[in-house]
Image 1 (spheres, one colour):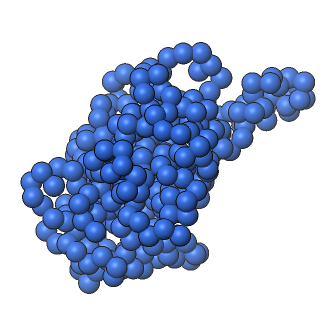
Image 2 (cartoon, rainbow, N blue to C red):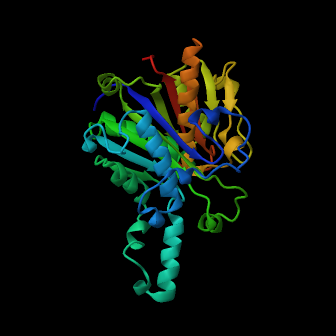
Image 3 (cartoon, rainbow, N blue to C red):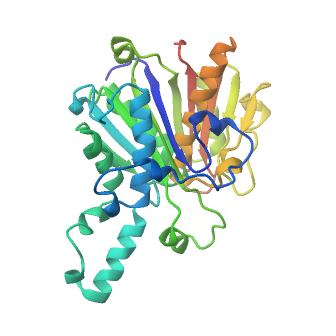
Length: 331
């Protein structure tokens, strides 16, 4: 398995009220009156795609374009079989699944259509990203709770390190629709949007003449939030300039002074800005961190970003994850 450094070379977002990835660093919640990001899509076949797929297509296209992996026509500028896709979503295409179940219960399978049943696959978001842009590399979907986004970023790194892909598009998406609200009646607010980033080895970026925005540092997944943070800090103890905190009912604001996670840096809670974003959280955090590191590099700041997700110690394994993002030029 290759030990070559993996870097981020492209970013994309599809969130109502946010025009660019940089606005994720803001501290005021979008007012929701802006245009629907899905309106940026055009062409045939959109009618049969669920909302999560459409949101991911917007963010994914933006990230691929920023990384120089697609041209104006959306076709890949590199061999399609070298580009993999990892999607993180917990609700995903649940609206299509619920519709199919209701249709079969009412009319039997005869009431379904050839367009509906294939769209009930849990991998449909990642599949449509691949089909749309001709990307034929490894194709995965993760649906494992609040750590899912950071897990997806790490799986993207593993695909590159193992030689399964040269570049990987990682997307995190959650839709807001009646089916989602029905399945989570206890939740008061819902995120509706997507974020995406492109990963590749530092060597690949250099060969393509693309400037990295940030690098991937240590990652840990543990039963307790403090354990996950402590493990990644043990591998990279440099001062943290930005810490993207996890969602938590009681509002985690810092992991404890003993961990040294933030020393004069900024604590950023994306759930304050966007509401609970479930499987999209970790990808949103990494996009935010890459933006921050790019700006910090211009200011001569040498610090890292800590992204963390999960609910802490809730009595089961793998309940929390943490990932360090490093400056683009650091080892």
